[in-house]
Image (cartoon, rainbow, N blue to C red; front, side):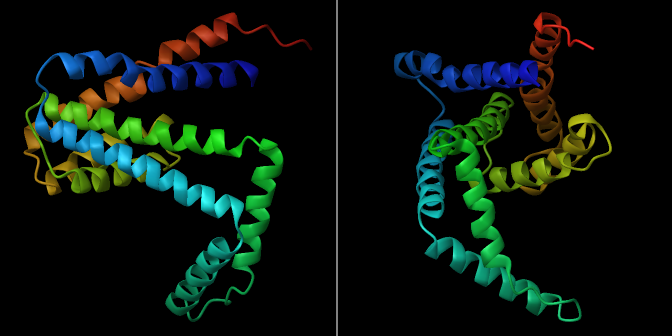
Amino acid sequence: MSALTTVNLLVLAIVLGLPVLAVPAVLSGPVNRSLLDAAGATVTAFAAIVCVGTLLMRTDGPLRWTGIVVQAVRNRVRRHARPLDDLPQRLLAARDQITTVLAGRWWRALAATVGRWLLDFMTLQVALAAVGSHPRPGLALMAFCGAKALGNIPVTPGGLGFVEAGMTALLALAGVSPGEAVTATFAYRLFSYWLPLPFGLLGMALAPKARR
């Protein structure tokens, strides 16, 4: 467990540090305008999500209201199922458990989690720009989220096969040509899935052997 945590921290530190290394390149030469627009939208989304997450973590009202709305929609959609009546309380209890476990450092976990996924999305944007395709960032984000949802299907490790097929199809629906969608998807998966694997092997090799 400690080795896995260390590897995750190393990968996260590298991912968060790459944009710092990219700043001189951005300032020293021309950069594709659509890629800069996507980066600006990503930074804006990062700030907005962190602000909303902070509000939900620090106050009860917005989280309780969210639970009431979701509960009402669920009960309306599934009228023949047993109605929910405690979702707001369950959300508040889960939130309190998270803040207790993180012991006052929840804001770091929130920023790191949001930053990790948004930088992962920027990896896809760079892959698309590399093949000469520039779909609207909103449509690309929908394709990204759909592919990540498919990755949660517990059939293959890391959603292998499901993510590639789903992302290729969703990018094609977003306006990317089929050939560019395939190339961009495989380039994205190379950097986001395959290249971090050696860090896992290194962590397994360096981790102390567990005693009986």
